[in-house]
Image (cartoon, rainbow, N blue to C red; front, side, top):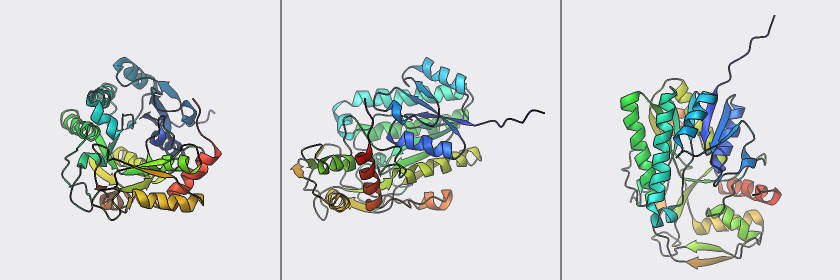
Length: 334
């Protein structure tokens, strides 16, 4: 008598070769799903695809997207793929609207053609703009001040429209600053070029770059530098698994903020890195970047109460420490 074969559920992960997407793939595999990575590898790393198949393709190529759905028949989509540099979006907004919004629209239309009506979407706190409130909740008005945030808000609108017209179920996660690395050392944060604060300061501490530039020291904050809420990447992807199960359980559309609820200035992060590295982080002071908000701090009460989520590893020592160990031990290679 032949053993019964269990049907394994696949999840299409756009941008799954990138920083957050690759960590999400590891979490999906641990949760019993097969992550199918769809990535054009323009910023992602093939070495980071370890937990399921890789489909090399571009979201602007609708035929390639359609073929991925036909071959793998996923039960849901996790959509991470996007351009995400605030300053770059202010210089070339057309590229952000074309890649982020058109790519998302292609993905959604192909998903619906394949009768795949569950999508977990990677949005951003940049959709809130630069509000005066000390803590941002999901009810804070969305008024983005850069093209990146505007493109993400537009995709949220598209999801709501297709939900009304085609029954597309979605969970939207508005991230704050994601940091850290896989505590087991398999994955980490590496961009080319690098623009994120923690890997940049680690590179400066290790002597791999001359110094870290602080962009703006005249903000109306206690030490003059921007304040951000940092969330550990492993906490973040844990929320995505919970969001996926939320959809598969038929619980409907919802938006959630994901952050630690604590704000840290650039200088505070640098001081924490000096403690972790037991050394110095050389810095130089530069001008503000266009499109940067003064302070963005999350209110994540909804995710805690409704998803049962908590940011258990989102402390500066853990986030910087995990990233430090990964950068000391390895990196991805082009």
